[in-house]
Amino acid sequence: MSATPAMSEQVLIRLARKCDAASIAGVRIDAWRASYRGLVPDSYLDHLKPEESVKLWEQVLEASSDAACTFVAESGGEIIGFASGMTLAEARFGCDAELTAICVLPDEQRRGLGKRLLANVAATLISAGATGLMAWVLSKNEGAGEFFESLGAERLYEQTFTWDDGSELDEIGFVWRQLKS
Image 1 (cartoon, rainbow, N blue to C red):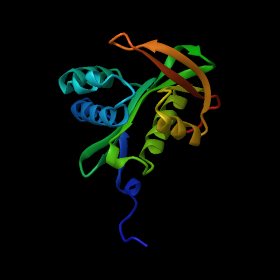
Image 2: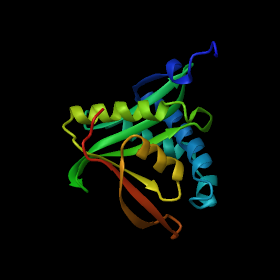
Image 3: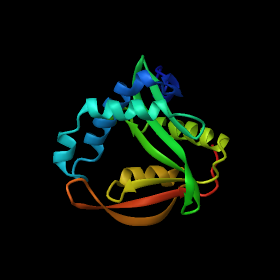
Image 4: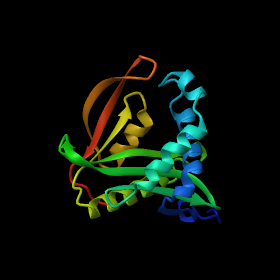
């Protein structure tokens, strides 16, 4: 038996603040480069620029409310993961909310952080009146699909979309029809 507590016990989950934008951008880029290599064009991953992502996350965090939220996982003063969600103006596939992002640094994955982050987003969206949640995953990202299914999500819909460089990628919509935190 290990004397060290599990990583998820040492991690604080809290609402993100505007000053977290640079850390969130860094986590997103690191997580995407690790998780999406070979799934999206390498040229896209290789040219991700933190400064562009920081501006986007500052805007997202300024807009946070009960209807749009971002939570971070923080350990030792460092952000190691985040999740964002929002209610939808019009329901899609029977869902009135969407998980718009969830990223955990590669070395911190499989320790329960994603589940804790998702639970906080879900609770906030429920308080804003949401009853169903959807999330989109690249169809080749089997780990993410397995993660959502392990938390009770149902594979609902598959669609093709055009990536920035014109290539076509497939994604799967996962739903939780009876949203519970």
